[in-house]
Image (cartoon, rainbow over all chains, first blue to last red; front, top):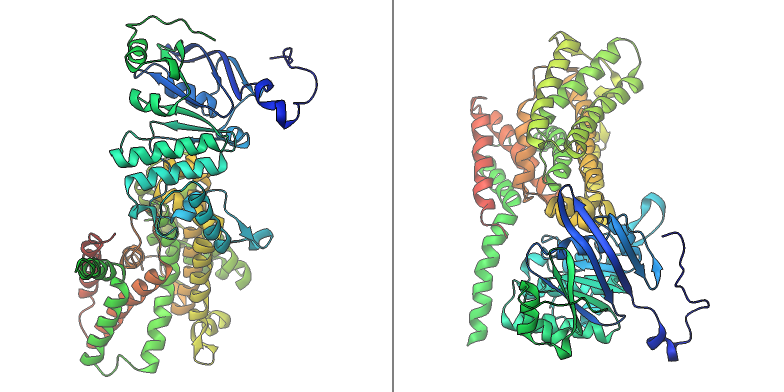
Length: 272
Length: 319
């Protein structure tokens, strides 16, 4: 943590050759986190390739949530290193993560039901006009831009002035993801985004994830749905008892193999 | 034909929701009509003028309560905070500190109680209901200690003029109450702070997750309610010419009732300043009309209570 030995001298090269040589967006190594006697993370290594969808798999209690909280600044890790674009970072609060463009869609979505869609999209990022104590909300701009935000992701919400309470489960999920995608310029973390959704709504969310990847946003997807992982993810990491149990390229993996890795039926070596 | 069905069903839903949402204005209209029929003294210029003056005190309290209820809290301490602030005003004035200092102290006394409530609720995470119930008792005791239980007369020409005069037919009380209501409306619906207050009440975990300082929002709400008590106390002293430590406990229920009648949710996250205004007017009209009709004062709390229960019943149909 004292210096950056592996850092290649010089600026990242021009856009043409940047993709193959640029460092991964996030590189986690040897991450450990204990809560008293409970060792939630006992050495996690994980790499999020820039612009890819990475799935994070594991049984309940495997450490997925703790890992996400370390990555979003909720829990500072005990030991280990997080490299962001090749540079070590210290995340001591959720604000730190937000400043790096990391946004999270939790299972609870984090929407305020009695506020309108546009108010939720701009929650704690409100646009204002005026100055000093006379700042007032710039509703017109926020309403207009909310429409743009949603249409850019092809999210179907008829009226951004309606309250979230009136939205269906799929619409809410889409709004939460759209909000994260709009502000999360680098990494969007989703915790079981389709756990509570029907078939059609699940398909819409998966389409949204693909669109994020097309827009060069890196996605970390926590899911228990193997079919879904096979459909949308590029890479899958399996956590078991707080450790990285395996890394698989999804194109070469099968659902049975991934399930086996999660339960421990299949021994997997953490391949870097 | 499917087209004709959909609007019909929507229309029914809308009318039930609308009735719930506009319970206070509808109730206000009904009460006005009822008293207008019952007595010729009700709908006269002088009576309505006085009615609005007495409603001003309740309205200011309700605006403070509105902010607390918006954050899913409740401020039970207004019942003793108003007499406390009034007693501080009377005490300071009789000590010869002059009216500006006495009024400032009254506002500070109210604010102090609110800040204390806010710190206990927001910082120490104590239950709002218990905290304000406790301070209701503590502050009423402090008031009795300060005044030895006696009414303190305040003979101030300025305060008397404040209660009686105005700009033409517009009384100063209305102006003050309107300013307080406008300020609360502006804060809630035009500023970032308002959005954060609504978010804190609507879903405190989501608000915290979005980086909103929910503790600060709750502190602001309770402090504002305390300050509103201070303002209401000044109006109260101006109107009655003194501070009576034993009076005005019914303003506690009325302030909460006005907010609930107005369509705000006691679970937080929803606010309506105009609704609370209508609610305060409705409750004050009831008391005013009962007095005009010569109905025993003992029926007033019964009527207010029934209206509150009715509002709670109607609010089941909301959303």
